[in-house]
Length: 104
Image 1 (cartoon, rainbow, N blue to C red):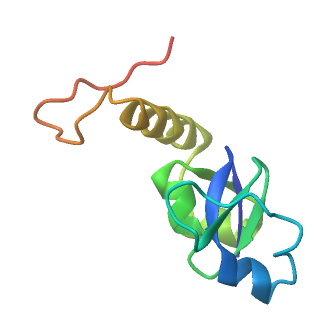
Image 2 (image 1 turned 90 degrees about the vertical axis):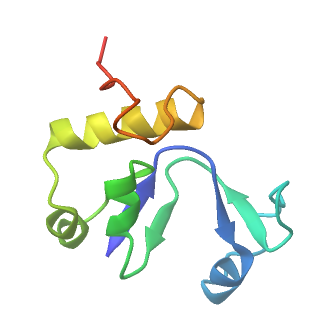
């Protein structure tokens, strides 16, 4: 199952090492020496990759991931926009407080 990251992200160095890609991604994550930064567009190949799609940090990169995430294109866009708003401090994560994020 594959998902493609929307933005530069931190990935476990051990996962990159297992794929033989550790030397390719040398930028160490500022928050953790156990992680390396990978560019936007990097493909995560993992049985739980669909969680990244539901979270809004990646898009499905194969039919298996798309089926497991079970989200329409509109839902995927809205989830991505909410993830960005949450990361920018525009949302608290509490549905009682947060106003639904509207696309412009």
